[in-house]
Image (cartoon, rainbow, N blue to C red; front, top):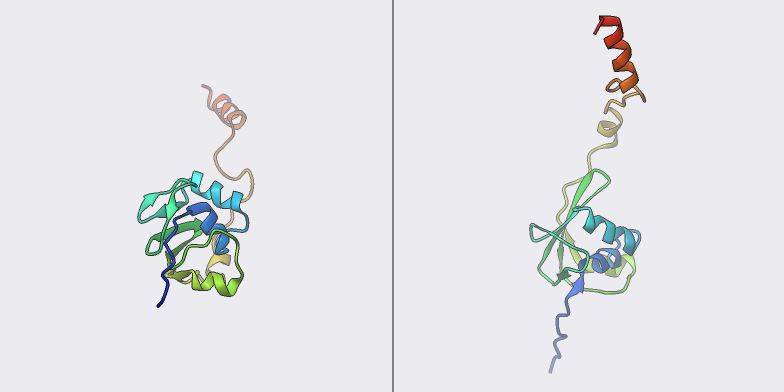
Amino acid sequence: MSQELPITPVRVDAWIWSVRLAKTRSAAGAACRAGHVRVNGERAKPAQPVKPGDEVRLRQEGRERIVVVTRTVAKRVGAVVAAECLIDKSPPPPPRELLAALPVRDRGAGRPTKRERRETDRLKGF
């Protein structure tokens, strides 16, 4: 006779932290509050519960992680156990060569400051 464990919903910030998608629980909660976490397509607050079968999208470091919850855990677990708790459907990260080729703007090379605009207006005679 096999005993089924009841499915207990877990807070999304705690789950993200426990399966090692975020370094700290506070970082996971901050990502939720900033709107970087979506559960089943809806923006998630830190206390929103997740259960097996939910799709969690986490935007971090310029890339989106798409994972499907297979098991809920409330405490941080090892990497091997964490891999069993989710199915990673994330697109592969962009190659490092592509990231290095992005142009980097020098500080101050963007829009003129208020002072620079006044000097320009003074030169134009306004």
